[in-house]
Length: 196
Image (cartoon, rainbow, N blue to C red):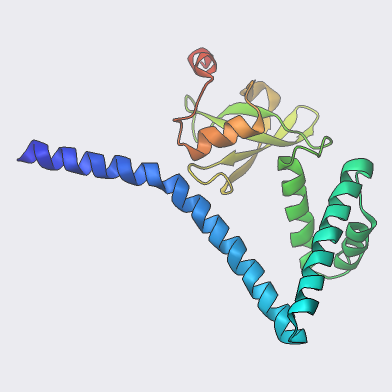
């Protein structure tokens, strides 16, 4: 009977872990749907007209496509530039906006000026190696973001000497997948074997 209960619990946990990615994606879809629905209600509540609401959404969609296209072609949009200028004059919000923009630019593939290296660093103590994102460099000092599993948006920011790092061949996407999957999705076994 004891083996039967263990097998049932094991199968249950495997089922839970198999469903977690689906649940996370559904949560994101529901969040976006709720956001769009709330926005629709605000616009419709203001005008009380489906035609006006549809026009606002179509114009917004075209505006976002235009901004994206301009950024791809020129690297910057005047609409975003105006918004940056206004936000830069608002205390506290300007700091949050600037930091969020840098983090998003670092993780996006279109931003080529930000460092997008992945390295291994001994953390939290010697002999334990973790992947980290290089977010900045100053001579031989590297600023690293060490993400935590399974949520790569939380973690620690540290400054480390270049001599304490081992460069990884992983890109940002592979490192993020490694962290989110708590090490299950790791195709750089040869790197792990060669770590001291």
